[in-house]
Length: 201
Image (tube, rainbow, N blue to C red; front, side, top):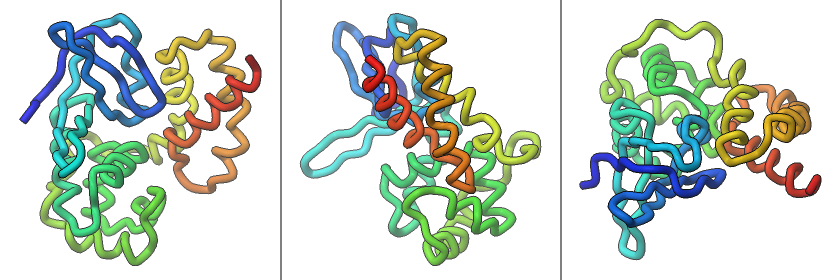
């Protein structure tokens, strides 16, 4: 079990980072929110969870131990693998997920790509006694809904784009985010923003 990785950030991509540990570059799969806090060449410490498959070893990285713990608890529900668990954390913070499960908020789970109404109902039942109570203060509104611009902007700056380029890309994908009608998935917006930046170059 690799509990965490610590070292300078060697490279950043839309869904992962490479952290140099003892002269070895380790690829860590991360949510856009986690990536937005990383900077090329700067030291970073990420809590990690190693997912072992017959044909692969995948390391997932998180801002803190709480996020990592929720990622692992989500996978105890039937039908939830690491990618869906990570998608849930890309859309909602650990406390928002705890609050959604505690209050039976189907809409919050349906906002995650890959989860439909029946799936949300099933997850609410299975996770009810597993995630525990929210540990932070009650959220006002939906953080991702109001904060996607800041998260996306920070992620683009972290990937090495200039402030002006990041601002233009955020503006370019704003219609897509607003058309979603539910908390937008920052990961999808980041991919769309990168496409507009590549076209502009």
